[in-house]
Image 1: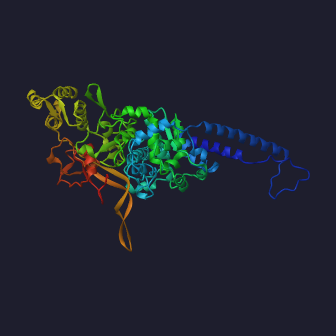
Image 2: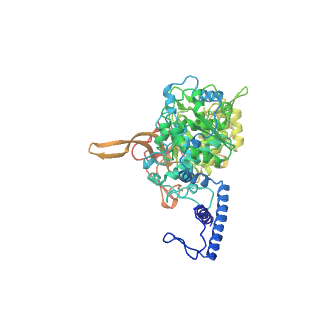
Image 3: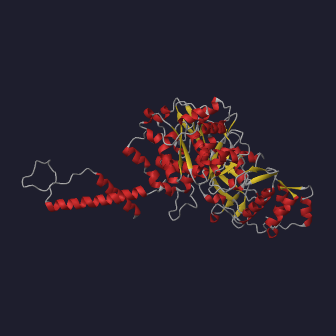
Length: 609
């Protein structure tokens, strides 16, 4: 009903805007009129005037209502149509905002790149737009051309996937097989779909999801109070004719000779706008989208995030503010940049909370739950420990870090993060242990901390077992964990005498935005097979044995149809030969989230570099 009423009001508004002249009264001798022109009696003329007045009143009400409406769907969804209908995207739209002070621009440039930055790194960050892949199979993904800004692109990508997969009602009907739940404000679960169904996404849906995601991240950086949007001043003779085409050549030409090699260069062209509501931020981002799609897009979004947080707050977040945010010598986005975009704070570490080093010194980590998470290959190499905030985000989407690149891992079903009773118990014990771990992720705690863990988790160990664990003066997680595995549930352990140990089976998808050779997409021509250069989307089938099971039970389990394929009971399984697991560095990352996961895929192995 609301949609019909709105359509009626819009119709009335359009009718009122038509250039109609009031009909003249009928004459005894009519004037020469075009064939088919209407004539009216005095009564008819009065009736026509009355109808026109009614239309004008309806139109005025419609206009008032439409102007008062601040919803995202009207602010963003109709922006493209209104711009094309009323005017071309002109210089006034591009040059929104004000100049920065030169001192602030110098501080910003130094914070990002440092005092000595190579032209190669500047080129990487000045030649990466925020654009979707033209390839149908990876059309939901942002394409990366340069090596440095992947941390920015991967984080935006994670939020775009969140909005497309779990908030489809925000953008209308995306695809018939992307499930939506009209009875709630968001989806609690999304049905699995094949990877090639992402080709069904329309350009309008992707654009709206991108705008919403960028605005969401910037408001996260602005502590949900404001978002600062940084754009570039465009010469007036270059601004005419700008539109919403992702490959807009006019915008590319406008920035063709632009070079930013110092804070002074940045100050001359940068324009900033502060938005205090998400609706106004969506409108500003929509208007400036061609600028973010240009070659300066990734750098401008990073600057927007830093300004939204505030430069002084960014420096206060960091453990060592003297280092540039873009790391030398290869120009990669630092963990501080990724954390800023994920949680709104530019902290350098990935563990939960902060670590007390004594003497009033702390290392700062993640302080709150996040929408999308983070996994890293470095954890599998024992260089760091990712906390539960990043490992278990609200939505099953993770930015994946390697030594030199960031990609995205995601699921289409939120149940991949569901835990049964024993898994929840394990998470509780591990969280309590990690809270006492002052070794920087080394996996051991003090005797005093160990007794706190036992009390907090209500674990009842025999005195001789406690003495044995404490004999060296510190307690190692692996030894403590083995004791927990052998301790019955009734005493706070994980030994399950019932044998009801389920096995989780689910699908994950991995997206690498940088164009690589894809042998899965072979094309045949007169010259034989040729590999396609494009982003990669890989579907992985993941089997996760219970983490408390001994190694001899890590066999493939044939799950009966009655168990639904996700869990099995002791009555519904039969043990067969172990299923061989394919291996790639991504599997090591996945196993930091799901221990001993077995992963399989078709074709080329997924790449995280």
